[in-house]
Image (cartoon, rainbow, N blue to C red; front, side, top):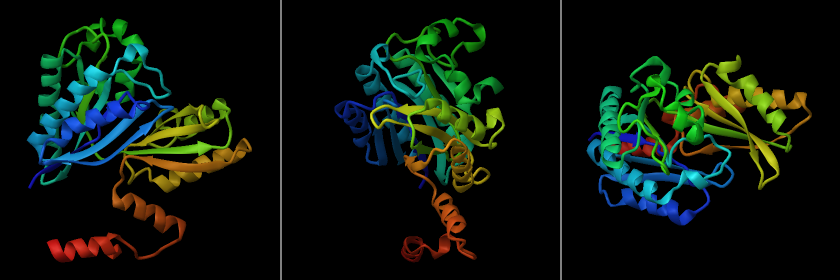
Length: 301
């Protein structure tokens, strides 16, 4: 059996009814399962994790994009998270009996279909990128929805699929294949966004921080605090515990406590085990000693 994971991000985090309708578009496919979904009011964004057989997950995602296009209007969308599309990004991750090359092909097929049938410009990113400057999602997204109407006129930003005009309400979408990514946020006990920005700058790769960390400061206005919002693009080489400890040390410089942290979506078991090993100084411990793993391996090997 072949399995592919996808974690589409939608620019709606306040209207649960809309998000549920988007999710329901995928639930009619027998060989696709929703593993997790979450909404964030301040970010005004939803993240859905689904897994399925390659052809079915491709069809399910197209239907989700179609529903999102009908329900989400970026002309009235406001949120803390950068965005350029109603469906902002669709990554494919190889999980079982699939290779990265297969995920790249799926991303291209889905991208072409979104462009042709929904008239939404599509940019291929990460492993699917057609040029080096398109590998990094943040470079594609720069300028966001509002800035893309001018950006798309530049020949170097001609979409990989679809029209060379921004969809008036749904914007543009990035589709690609990548490795596992961990969306990891750390909440700080202050409402000073400058502090969150400085800490984000200290840990993100582009400004001299960790090689596989993307970070930005975010205001959580409803909670009256700020957040260091991150994507860890290689948790093995920039592990959660190392990044978290760096943020704690940086926060101490400004006399600010770390309130808590959060994972958006799901993470590999290995990432959680490595954090546990570090914090309670476990030696000689690995996934084989997790009881749920042992049970699964015993009955399904």
